[in-house]
Image 1: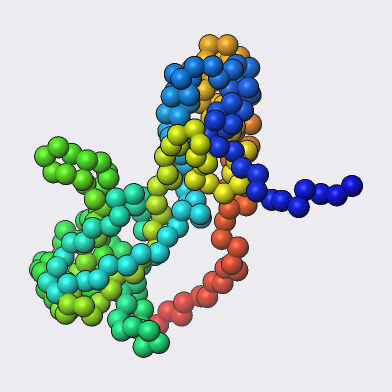
Image 2: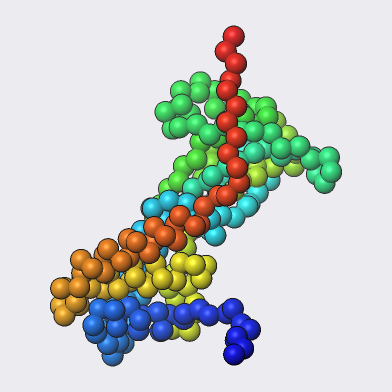
Length: 235
């Protein structure tokens, strides 16, 4: 027998929701069923953002820094920054220099926040990313100290954790790697079981299955580089 020769299996939103309803012992029948499932799916992806680092959502970005400017916006869908450096120069002459992340308490105690020099510390103000009628979009921001003493010389380079994309319409596929499809279906089935009366009796089992599937996928989706610990010599 020959194999298919393809490795492209995925689930669009319609098929994903149908599978979740079937696990609840129900059927997807109405437009409201799809709407409530899409809402639950969006809440589920937010839960995943709270569970930890999803490696496929790590993206690199950069911000050109301006002399005397303290605050810079991050992309609105940024959850948090994982690492950051200050880059000087370009091409083969560029140099990345560490910049330390500090808390709001530490930043607030800096006497002169407008002092200029090479930035060595950054406070990350995560904000909500929501749109407010009076203030516009509450972008996540960074505050650097000292403020840059030159324009077009320093670049803030970061690696961020972004939000998972929304569920979208029925023809879109989830913003996840195929490895997480079983966890996504299991999680949606568990969420739906809380809203479908006929599925109440299955809720406990669906929760257990969901937690097992997510843990299995999360254990695989991890950094596999070797960890090297070096003791620090004390003087």
